[in-house]
Length: 326
Image (cartoon, rainbow, N blue to C red; front, side, top):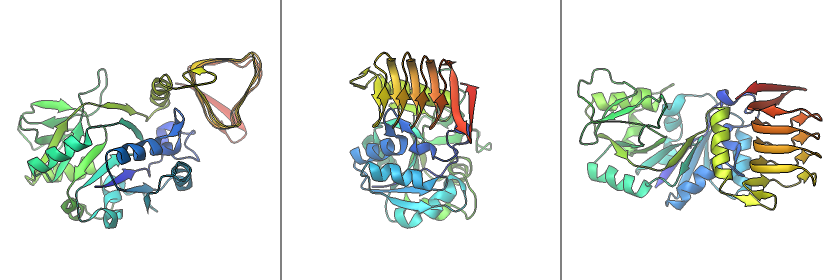
């Protein structure tokens, strides 16, 4: 099976962390997000993967090349939405069923085999993998009838008068038949907001596969940090459980790193520093005596001696350091 992984987005909610780096190229507990997605697909037997590109494309390509992952690329000079991404990659996808996967989320081993079997048994044109709605969240729901047929996606089409049997969450994986490619119109379009309502109104077989797997939304600094910390707690290094330090890091002997902590390449942690629940990018400098907790630190940030950060999102913008609350 083939797959298109969406990686062209601007990552605006993570700015300025994503000013010069794609969101999918960010390290998530030691492994770039895009690499995690591609490896998940490989584990489930996806043999041909195409990745669409727009913002900071070289950072996506570098992350995959460094990980030894060979994929095809579909460059997008202009962002044309998820529907436009499908049209742009059609030469890679035509001829057989394929997956469309959001590349900016964490997907931990979804039941792709079961979903594909369900899709084929139903004779579906399109199938969404769906999860129970996360508690306390306000995601727009996907509504199904009692035969698992999709009635509405985020309230569309409004013309549907049928009542739902389930209201579920879409975490970012579709299965499509290649005929769908002929139904995507030129120009900007959105798969969920434009294509699905048209398929539903046309009476085409569109289904939802209700499943369960661990998934993280990485769209905001707070969500990204929380996901990274969960995954870091499952790892460790010579610095302790839940602590990862990249190549070239220098850490003072009396510094205290209490996991979860991730340090990118070439970080410096000075004497007397205390870090807990911290994710720091490449080349970050902790000058000494810093106490930093529950914070996301971007590439190249330099904290002077004695500067403390708690519940912060800190990035370098030009020659200035910018700090915002998480």
